[in-house]
Length: 153
Length: 287
Image (cartoon, rainbow over all chains, first blue to last red; front, side):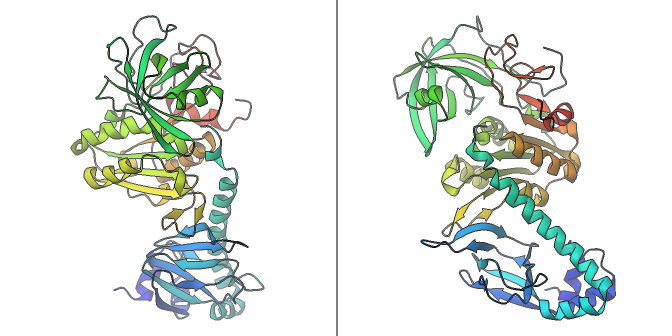
């Protein structure tokens, strides 16, 4: 099993970060594991963590007023889950639930925010990467809003 | 009509292309809430050879005619298989044509996928919604000659889990033919354990050698545009990237112009065209 410090530089999210920054980020990270059905977080709770999925699958869900939650997105190996740790008021906007055995690296968002405040260069580098994740998710949501499969091919 | 550097193989209609041949529905299967598959046999006993990717004009007598891609096995020209989504008056009549019903068929028309040109390399199929049906003959062709290909991926996006087509095929292709089948849906309920998201995200992660890959894409044009961009970003060459353009085919022989895309008549120059031809056309709102 690779250590977090070994793993992070190979991950696309952290690619290109200077070694000291990776070491700094790794200092805020721990390995975690979730069983199928276990939640990573719930909507409305404080968002002081984000995750890099190493193995497994996570559903991002919105609770419906009546009936079962709706799955609005899913995350898989190498995906990054969570940006609310960086955006006030730092509360989760969705539920995240493991749908199979899932291993992840959990990053302490409060710890990272402190480091970003202390060193804006680190903050900017991380912000660029989080914005990329947000952009991909936003684009996915926008195209799915078109309901392209609902119209004839 | 113009000579075009599209994809290639095709079979020609037998006899007068304007005269429908009678076919009889032998089997009738509901695939999803709005999609049915009909298995037909020629009433005159003559086979209808076709290339994977071609389409026919299907006629429900008294209702009208519609272009429908062939979804069956090109190695079995004695039967004609069509997967039809009920979206209007003609397709409603077609999907309700039960066993014994006679339908008129013109064709086959258009260009094929020419998937055999991908032998020796990887093949990536990207399907969206009912777009899996026109790709099915090419997938069957690859499965029948599986050892000639490298990695084979089928990346398939559907609206919901209930809209996933050919579930038995997907399982068989994965289990028996080493096809890496990845399915994603736009919307999933709580019980859905699979992927939710865009099919283009599967392209980003797909394990294939882009430089040595033939990619075949079929689905709504918006989806195809983004899938093509994702495949290009991975390094698939435009000439090795083929899309099936489904427009309003009518005559089937390049005369009426209903299916015109700038200088191309898609019923004869297409429906399968390479991305080097299509790229400048796909983002033009006027077309």
